[in-house]
Amino acid sequence: MEYVILGIVLAGVLLLAGVGLLVPRIRRRAVPPAPPRPTGAPEEPAEEAGGVGILAPERPTEAPEAPAPPTIETPAPTAGRLVRLRGRLSRSQNVFGKGLLSVLSRDRLDDDAWEEIEDSLIGADVGVEATGEIVGRLRDRVKVLGTRTPAELRALLSAELVEALDPTLDRSLKVGGKPSVLMVVGVNGSGKTTTCGKIARVLIADGHTVLLGAADTFRAAAAEQLTTWAGRVGAEVVRGAEGADPASVAFDAVKKGVDTGVDTVLIDTAGRLQNKVGLMDELSKVKRVVEKHGPVDETLLVLDATTGQNGLEQARVFTEVVDVTGVVLTKLDGTAKGGIVIAVQRKLGIPVKLVGLGEGPDDLAPFEPAAFVDALVGTDA
Image (cartoon, rainbow, N blue to C red; front, side, top):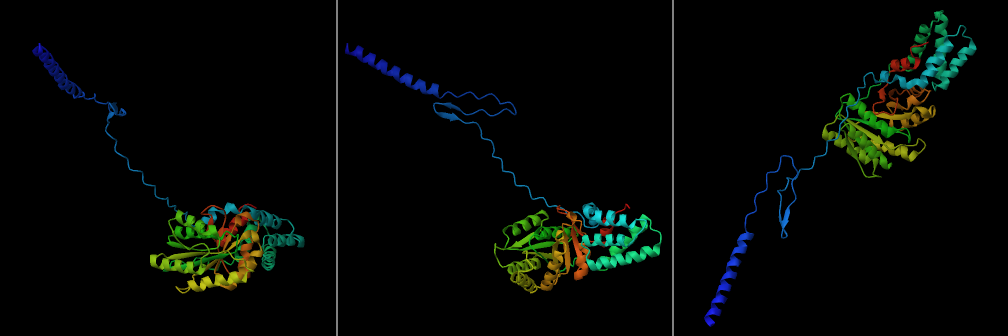
């Protein structure tokens, strides 16, 4: 009996051992390969079996796109720019072209008519002295001419206005040295920093290399504004901390210009009020410090044409402090007083070298007396 029981137990042990060997073989049976995925089909997520994932192959990580380089603008050519912008002088054209020519075309030019012409010129900020000379010569030439066709009158008026603008003055910018140094000065609100940026575009359009010095350290936005203008044409800016010594920034800008080999350094200075003696003395200091590198080739005074005769007093004081060599007359498109060009030159003997005829980046034009007068007088009687 004991042998029977022992045999049954032994048979049960062998049976359990066989099952234990068989189950792992079933579990280790290979998973059949997945059917090939069609080209372009999305990858399937990993399948889980007993908490263990069968992972799909990972996609290669794409490198981030490099930022696009800043777009460098090419300023419009300056040659003939004043002619292209002549339509911006529409308000002044109403005074000089339509106004004066209509009076000159009257059948009878009596004293009242000539007085009306004088009033028109004075109202256009030509100035009392210049107006007297222009009207006097016009009266003599009209009397000698006898006949007065519209074309003849237009030619007479144009000739007198061009003569009053003194076409013999040198209006070129003295640039092209190693480097040439240009200082830009002016009162608050004249658009000086913006004009400085536009002057840089004028120089670059004419083939010069330019570095700008942000020596207006008192107005927080001035350096940023100048940097924006420079970046659009690929020019470098030397700037200091807010409130830094302007003379030091100007000195560093010229030194940087020498080291980098540019042919022009353009220095923007803080806006000054002509009745603030201390500030004007500081502007004089900026010039003295810059001249340790060499002479300042140009000092350009930015004047707002809409200020009229007040601009003459501003110009006079700046000339006494820093020896202004040229005037940049801005906002000339927004006034009927185009005669301020004549008044500035006659009062100070300083040529107007550039005129602003709009808010666009390339609306600053080299001043040409004949083209300017032609725009004022127009082509119609």
